Amino acid sequence: MRTVTLYIATSLDGFIAGPGGSLDFLESVQAAGEDYGYAAFTEGIDTVVVGRKTYASVLDMGVPYPHAGKHVFVYSKQLNTTADHTVVHSGPPADHVRELKCLPGKGIYCEGGADIAHQLLRAELIDRIVLSIIPVHLHAGVELFPTGELPPGWLAQDRIVYPSGLIQTTYLKA
Image (cartoon, rainbow, N blue to C red; front, side, top):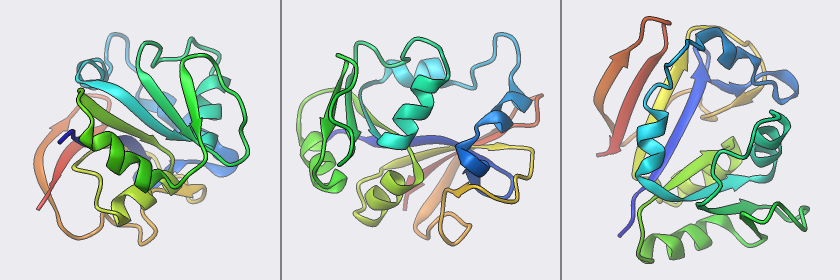
């Protein structure tokens, strides 16, 4: 069975995006040559699952789509077409990810956003969470966890504190 990983960053107060979906807070930890393990992580995946808003945010960054060459599924009931490297899926994400986990291949990356992450967590389909805490407070925006805290049943496996102040913790299901 393939592993699903939620690899995501939040502010100290638990927001994955600021008001209006802004991701500007991520810039506070950008350091030349530092990717916080992201390149190594993406080498171990061949499938990306993402919600429409997060997909649009990535495209709006003005950089080449970072997951070209991988199987990308965008969950949306509104979006009809995407770039040729993606497939729009209008059905329930949990049902689809459950099917993907049974197919041969590498890991599956839950890129976000919060709604997709919540659905997959509720369905117990996420096996690992790599959570990067950015040392800023946003006070408003899109919360990762509705309660403000990691759901019960997760154990911290390792923690890395970077010179930028970013703290990255990997959690596995208990």
